[in-house]
Length: 465
Image (tube, rainbow, N blue to C red; front, side):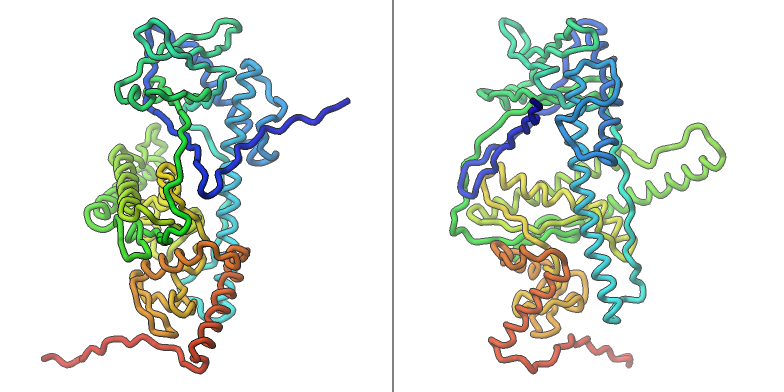
């Protein structure tokens, strides 16, 4: 009798008001090499493991649905346990890739529908181009990273030793595991004090050295009251965060913008030099990346993290609402704006907002962002002409005027618990619902025959004084 394989049990998500379990990572733990060549067995295992993992990533991304329990397919000198670990790591990477690609493709379809709608109405700008879909490449493992579990790597507390832990790592030689001591720094000892370390670990190799990442679970009690006021968060390039209370946090202006501009010019010069050398069949060509560019990216993320932390500190008793963004499909007409989109690391903002909410026990709800920047927070009139410039919102119907990011954050705060908006499947349905609410607002205020307000431009005299 053939039995179906058991599916792994999924952890239940905590409901609102219930304690949440978060996983914290302790990184940058360097493995100590007691004897010369102690980690040679791990160096021998790593390329074989990564090659096998890459095969399954390609398989799960192109041909099959990711499956952690898939039957081994490729021949390898690794043991069956290592083979299973490679399949699980590849399935996780492929599952994330498929989800991100599906979200980006949905955003592309919505952008294409909006383009054709404007084309049919005759409101399309002369410089607008039809959105094109570029197929995503399969993920490639470029760095040595092994996500191992207790079947192949066991982290055991040290007994009567100067070290804190011992790693027992299975190698290519059967019955000859590798024992590696782990010495924690004072920072790591403080982070792991009275904590139960999880069985899964991660091994990374950078600059010829092996590094260990441990993790532990922490229970966070809820801090947000059920009747807490909702604060909407609008994320952007000019201002990283704008709340519905009118506060702005972080910006790409000033020194940060100048640094990104200088870095972009540096990469452009390197790209020209690289193309010139490739035409001459040079054996060695320079890379367009640099250490200063990597430091700038890290600095931008730190600025984003500071903006998010400051926002949470200024609103300790609030229920936050933030917009769901798919940055992969976002494009601007100007090349400079696309460059700043890449430099601002906009995709990092929603992730950081969600993570800060979880670790603080604060409720943060993602909502649909469609037309949040074009909808009037007063009369719900939705049109692209409501945004005459980047930072100004001027309703063409009721004349309401405010900062564009503040108006968008107010709309986002009102979309929490909006079941009608959540049921909309595409941008077209969202706009139809918003215009329906606009018609209801006109009936309530008796303004059915009102004409559209046109923004007055300041008159400039041609005469000289």
